[in-house]
Every structure is written in C-alpha cells, then in structure tokens.
Length: 347
Image (cartoon, rainbow, N blue to C red; front, side):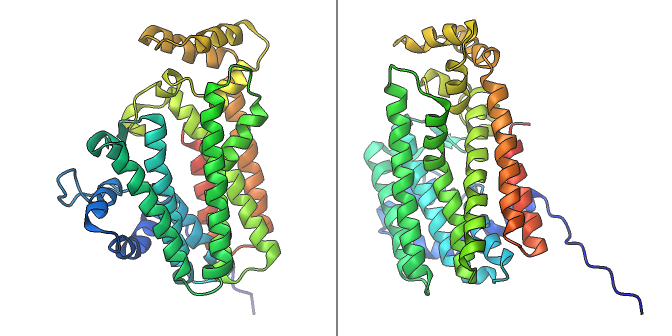
C-alpha cells in the first residue's frame, strides 16, 4: 500500500497571520486594560487605537507582531496558543508602553496617522500612560500560570531593562560629537528593538514547554528578526512614504538620528560621508533642500546598501535558527513569513 503524501501547510500571508493574532489577543488585552483607572484608560484606549480623541469607538489597530510571535513560538514547539496568551498580552503592553515613551523622547506628533498622546494630552499624560502599561504587563505576567509567572516574568523584566538601556543609548548617540561605529549602533538596535522581539519568541516557547535548546534557537530567531525590523525602520525613517509610515518624511534626518544606515554612511571614507558629517555637525534645523541632500548623501556614502545587506544577513541567520528549533511545519511557515516581512518592508 502506497504511503500517503505529507500534507503541506497552507501558506498564509503576513496580513492574515497578524490579523489572526490580533483577533486572538484583543479580548484578553481589553480585559487587562480595564483594570486601569478611567482617566488613564482613556489615554491607553486612544493609543491602542480603540477610541478617537473624544473617547468614541474607533479601529486603528497596531501590527500585533510581538503577540503573533509569542503565540506562534508556542505552537512551533507543539503547544496551544492559549497557553501563551498572557505572555502575548504582556508583550503587546510593553511594546505600546515603549512607543508612548518613545514619542516623548523624539517629540513625535504623529503615530499610525493620528496625533500622539503627547500631542493631544501633553507630555505628562504620555509618560504616565506608558508607566501604566509597563506595570500592567508585569501584573499580567505575575497572574499567569507557571512557568510564565516565575521564569517568564524574570525574562520579560530583564528584556524591559535591556530595552530601556537601548533607548538611552540611542539618545546619547545622537548627542555624541565623536564618530559612532556601525557595531555600536547595531548593539543599540539589538537592545532597543531586538530585546522585546527576542523575548517574545522565548516566552512563547516557555509557555509551550520547550526544552532549553529549542527555546534558545527561537530566542535567537527573534534576536535576528529584531535587527531586521530595526534596519527596515531606519530605512523607512529616511526613504519611507508618510502615507505608509504615518510619520513625516525625513524626520530621522531632521532629528540627526544616528540610525543604522546613517552610522554606516558616516563611517565611510569618501566625500559623501564627509559632507554628510558636516551637515550633521550643524545645530540649526535643516531646510527641505538640505534634508533631501542628506538623504542623497546617506545613499551615496553607502549607508542604504549596507543596511539592506545587513537585513538580508540577519534574515538568513533568523531562518537558520528557526529551522534548528525543529518547529511544527505550519508555525514554521508563519514565523518565516513574518521574518521576511520584517526584512522586506522597504521593498
């Protein structure tokens, strides 16, 4: 009797994967946020896209990447998504808390095509709403079943400390007059962005009962995925379409951010790098022509090509670690799809 062919998992698009994760997590996320005091909840409901500035129902969802990674990592090692739900909620709370504080640090006026909390309600409101979401994430994990409430909580809080360290490094790099190496910028990005994406994958594996080796591979998958994500963010911060990014074009250059492509460009030994360095050394705001010139110089100095090459490298490393985790085929296909999305967002 002939053996039956192995079923091939039906491929899902990145949009379907993320939408499915958002649907799975939103009821529990809303339940968690209900524990906040009403004045703070009004702020967080707006930031999460559930209401407009007047408190009326709205639908402006985020990407739900981190919750998707938590749920899929759990399924990748044979667990059920429900086992990882508290960790998925906590990861999304931490991410949104960091966005609120990021908007304050960068004085951003727009996020997801809408005014930020800071722009609408002021800096104290944005800081306190972010604080509330950070501690709500801790509370969510503390109330989860073991091992999430013990080992998982330790992993999450360590990742938050790493995220904070990365955010602070980002602010100090902007102010440094001496050159910043691409390796320094990459380490900052690994902490600022990669830490939460990496621990999201590890928490999913933990919730599903993975052994140490498979957990490490999934954590490393997330770490390289985080680098892909930050590289794409930095490329979009210069060349992205505001209609897609929801942020003003060339804003990163106006803020003189030492982003990954900029750092690579400034470290090059060529004429465009030196001209870019002179522009970055001025303290006055750059005009529109100067901003366009700066974007051209980043590319001419090699920063754009370097960032794209690094993104491809980290994608390859991420997929190697994913395969080494011996994942379930359907979850592997979805995780690989999200990795490629992170690397290809600038295409």
